[in-house]
Length: 223
Image (cartoon, rainbow, N blue to C red; front, side, top):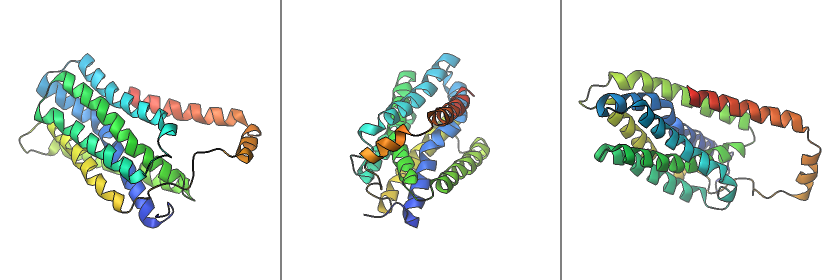
């Protein structure tokens, strides 16, 4: 088993993290393209957006039940494969209901691989540095795509371009299983020693940190 601290493992986790969150970052373009070319109204766009984020949230809230139990590479194959199909299906045959359902499935499938990347980076010796690299990658790729996609003239609208880019990235991400660890450095089981340490922790600081993270994500989602 490849160690999570191996350079190749960290590169795989960072790349997977960036790939999985790209659709979320370019979603304003996709929604705009759907409104312009498919004539969707605000409520329909809102449901499509919420479906993807809801799927992502549901699967990761349940991460304790699957993240440490199964081979990470198999999870990535399943997650990326399902997400690829979910992103491309509305391009082949579009309907508002199908797009919303596919966004829900894509959110759940993307969340599987995203959860693996988060767990892999969190298990490393320098998680702060590795998470910083992932967030930097997200920023640069999103900025590049948001600048480039509206300027691409290949005879299709932004909806098709955005969905296709997301599908291609998820399909390409499957190749990362070659260098991705099959499991992390932690089991997910809490030892008696750790339980004692948790009791003595300053709970206020932990709660404040979690609330701050939640507010940040809510603000991004609201925008």
